[in-house]
Image (cartoon, rainbow over the protein chains, first blue to last red):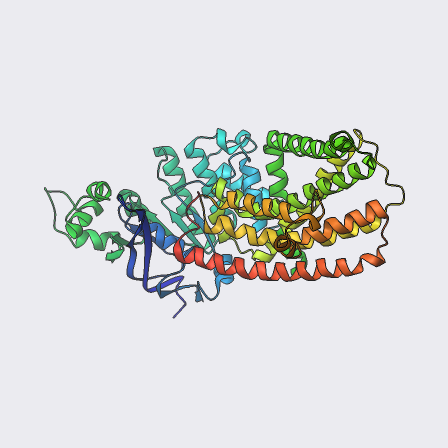
Length: 272
Length: 274
């Protein structure tokens, strides 16, 4: 049997939140469970979705896989490498696109991507060609390549973030809500590119989103996460098949979420 | 590819990034250069005015050069210190810290790139200040040991790189106020290192603290070279102290940084942009 692209076993993560008391200057310490006993295994070339409301633990999971956080318990292996003990081997295999397009705002897309390319040891000439190719493919215009990022719209910045994620040809690509805040056209561009990458680059993709439609359209399998726990994991069809028909229509992933948690996704987000 | 060449290519990412930051924030650069220049001039004019202030005959030329050496060396060393200590603060400010820490780059390579830039930038900046300040005063450096001064400056840089790494830990630990804390650390070094006055005038306990500051040895040695023409050979003990202590501080600094980075990953402190 081949090594899974990603194997997570019983991973938990708790954060300590400190707050000043109202009457006394003493600091109150509160434990916040971000993930609790999460386990999953993802095969090579799979597009795996993790869906759940804001604050459900999706981004914490991505940060653990990105070596930016250490788990309190449990193990994570990426292509057989332990994220804690073989950090550098893992870092060479992964890249990440997060919901916040974090860049040097006064740098141009080319300067920001050149910085990323150098950090990953890419020969700069080859990298420059690839940067242009990916940015054009994502629908960015050539004249925007050299203008400061701060002058670009949120959607354009997010496309540059996607380009940065793909630039290093990661074997495991971590997409943390990559289409949040994008207009429908940009969203479609990014989604088409994700599929194309899987077909052409032999990449495994882990996608977190709270857009159920996006997950349904892109993912081979989906895990539904709520309050740090995986509450269901199956193919989109398998998940939808697990709930009964409602109001005469085929169940959607949103219906599955309501059935499993007793709440709508928006209610969950408001309740946070 | 040779692993050393490969690491140096990665280190160049930080050199190029800092050059781009200077190009994009050129207004800040000019403001900071003017501040340093005016500061150097103001301090040096104290020397020029001492005869009038005290009403006694003094060797004004000596005082001017004494203060100018202090102010220029401090300007250079503080550039090294801030450039290294800001390697985290900048990333926090721009929000890119997670991407840099996620990349397969060792902290040692990160440091080599940042140091390379800091030394080149510090030398160029100090030269500009020196040229302008020299046009205001008559500087007599005849008989000065310039080669010894340059070697001493480079040896002193090693220690300041180490101190910079230790200071860089602060923005990692304290996202909101870490950068300001490095200013306090720099101010303490300025007080105790004999930048504008001999260390001997400090209270006894502060003199003991001063003996632990590498800047004390650099400035004392520089004055020896530039004011008294002290030979390079006679400066050998200071070279050994600076390089030995500098190497030790870098090793300890990298160790502390590694521990704090792990603590930040354990507690989720890399996420907050401050």
